[in-house]
Amino acid sequence: VVGSRNGIVLLQGESTLAGLELPTGRIIWNLRLPSDAPKHVTLQGDSLYWMDGAVGRRYDAVTGIERETLPLPKTTSEIRNAKVFGKDLYLITDEPETERDNPFARQAPGNALWEIRAENPRVHHPGSNDNDPGALLVHQDETLHCLQSDGSIRWQRFLFPGPAQVHFIPGKCVLLFNEGKTDLHLRALDLRNGNVAWKLNLPRLRAGHGATYFLEGSRLVGRDNSDAFLLVDLERGEVTRRTRIARRNGTAKAGIAEDKIQILIAPYSKQLYW
View 1 (cartoon, rainbow, N blue to C red):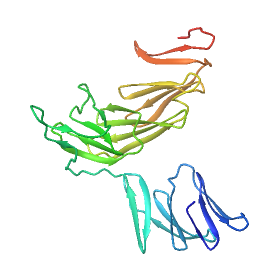
View 2: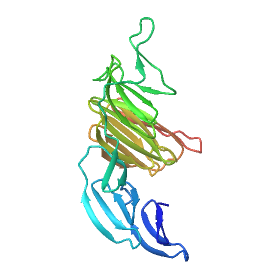
View 3: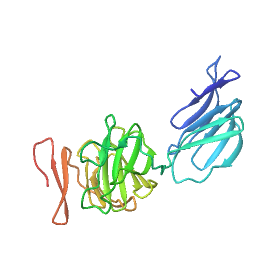
View 4: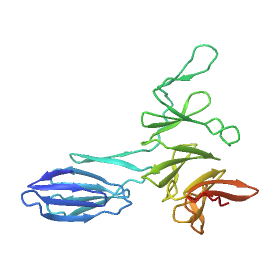
């Protein structure tokens, strides 16, 4: 429920914005929103404002008629929310902040150069074989901090929910998020400034009927639950190959050996397929 005006209740769903007449329950107007568009609706006076990432739209809250469109400022980050105060429109984004002040990295006793004091932080490090071993990612309090080896902040940005897994490739970190029960969402960040390099949704890849995936260097290889093998280029964030295979339900494990993708599947009949 967004609010109400003149006996009209304003409702927002996954892909719908509607006005409902309160005494009768009759739908007065109904707007279909793109399913992949962000849903940032705010009510100010008799106007509804909807920000779809590139354009802001103003609708009459009582009739649902579009009154005005305006281009939004270009940004490399996603608009998280929008608020209208009087004649001013405020856009809240997750654009990285390069502020060097670090509230939780401080001098440590003994021989340690610095330490982090935080509640339940999640720490991710590229490892010694990556191009940027000096980067350290710390996710805490809905914020992702990129620290350098001396404890100073390279960048920080809002991030909620936190990633289920982080994979590093040269110059980027790939964040993996669980979407629903079976889907996987990937988002790559530039390690230099924290900007989003690309986004990619991979449906039915995380769980169910033999679905599995693994990460190897700049590649993601997976088998979804619709009998398709996927090869993803993590540099560009694109599916470069999709191959159908015969159905083999059951628990699946994937890996690379001798330059080949090896898939072990144990179906419910207790046979083993390789």
